Length: 298
Image (cartoon, rainbow, N blue to C red; front, top):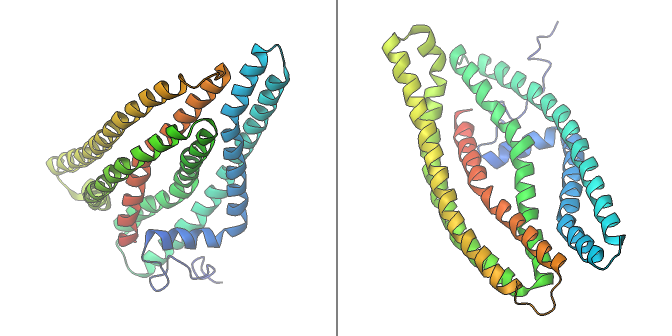
């Protein structure tokens, strides 16, 4: 009878076939599960399109209610119900798809690493690290798509209300990009240190003295603290630009002649959507930097 490893086709976890970049690794993972992943991302796109409509429909509902009409309210409720239904369906479907992907991937990884005579402690650590690829596809890629819809979609909708707010949004995008480029380089170095210690964890638990065990976990704690501090500084500096944007938008919108209350509300909902998209960038940068180091190890 063939062994379980022999029954598995060679793929990205094979030393000869494995991609050497994060994008290559992720692309190979998605290619192996093309059909289910495409459906998951279709649901994700539909969910974000419906989410993008909500501030507009809410503003329409406010304006109609102020004019003694219930038409806008019914449109808002219909849009909200469609968004919730799509969101819940996608979440349930995603769990099934990505759990299956992880089981396949970690099986291939363990089998290929054992054939290469990698020590068990490192195989165990790398099996745990490899989970981050599935987590990235399941959680971070949808967040990335949502952030793109939030930023690009909000800018498109804000252009409908006043082009000056769009110009302000574009102006803060450049310094935020620079901040996150600096953050990416910094967090990559911290990730390498953290993963080095993670790979040695089983050996430390099994063989090291009490003092070395304490030193090991204190070092890991310092890595997490450094990573958290880097993210907090980047996010904090980004918020300064966001404050300036919100103040400018208040000055512009409230001086538009004959603007309706619902339109003002919609503008600021779209601005908050844009800000939320910007705020997710540091976490995405951190996850991508960590994956780059994991690819090098696997």
